[in-house]
Amino acid sequence: TQLLEQSPQFLSIQEGENLTVYCNSSSVFSSLQWYRQEPGEGPVLLVTVVTGGEVKKLKRLTFQFGDARKDSSLHITAAQPGDTGLYLCAGESREKLTFGTGTRLTIIP
Amino acid sequence: DTAVSQTPKYLVTQMGNDKSIKCEQNLGHDTMYWYKQDSKKFLKIMFSYNNKELIINETVPNRFSPKSPDKAHLNLHINSLELGDSAVYFCASSQPGYTGELFFGEGSRLTVL
Image: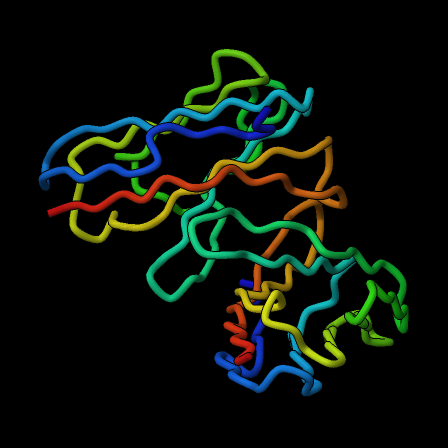
């Protein structure tokens, strides 16, 4: 069974601070996706990274895929209250998507 | 115009009952899924259908039976409901293969008393 461990599990920080969320596995993935889920809604895709070492930026969010394609990180600069939500990484291998354990992020105004 | 819609959004029922959750997508996708999200927010795949054909069936009790009457619909029927079945069930769709984006419905919160 492929496991994707996310850390931290919970994170509560002040508006304007920076933060990093980690997604780690012992398995190699063909690609890795990051989703954000808000209360009462389904997850929504933020980004997909495919190549080892790839870095993608989405405004204040920076996503990186590890060189060995076993891990990924999400860095948020100058966090805003609108960034609050559950962040889920998901690794794809052999046409199967496995979700991570999730990081609940709260940005305090 | 909702892309992936599920009904009902909330479902409260007694142990031992049988219930169904319906899902429809208007994105023209070939692949549809059912995921279960537990109280710790862990999202786990249950089933996947590609053009009405079952392609993924994770270790799910036989009490759970998916049905896909056409590629735009994937329903989930649960027999003899147990307390541990309480969770949020998400329907999702995508283009063929897992490298594509998953489009999720809003979820159906099932509470078994």
